[in-house]
Amino acid sequence: MRNHQSLKEHIQILEETLLDPEIRTDPIHLDKLLAEEFFEFGSSGNVWVRGDCLGEGGLSDREFHLYDFKIEHLAEDIVLATYRLKDSTRQQNTLRSSIWKEVNGSWQIFFHQGTITTLEKN
Image (tube, rainbow, N blue to C red; front, side, top):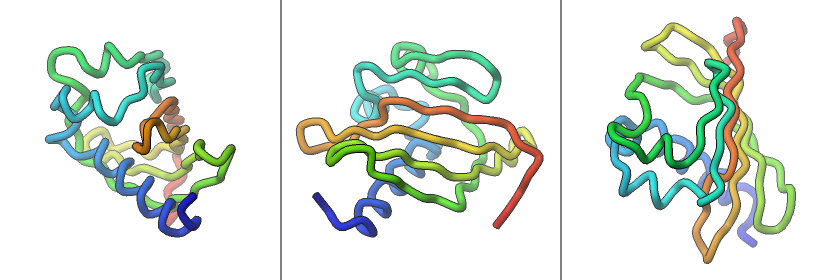
């Protein structure tokens, strides 16, 4: 297992990759990052599954800023990532959590949840 700091940096890069407009709209890149069993409880209240994200147009294209990033090990090959997200497009702040699993040497997102909050901390 990587040391905690390098794994934290790696998972944060993966989360930021999922926020990149080019990646969010590219099913080929999303296919590599989303686990087969992926599902999300969206900040909208909707439940999304992997197929919804890989469909035409991919994920929505918005301007995001991620901060206050942390990870907790749930098992040797599973981590919980938590962070805050400023969505400048929709003028929203959310608390985010993701579960990442290492699958065949690569990290994939298994679960994600966004919860709208009025709080904005830096």
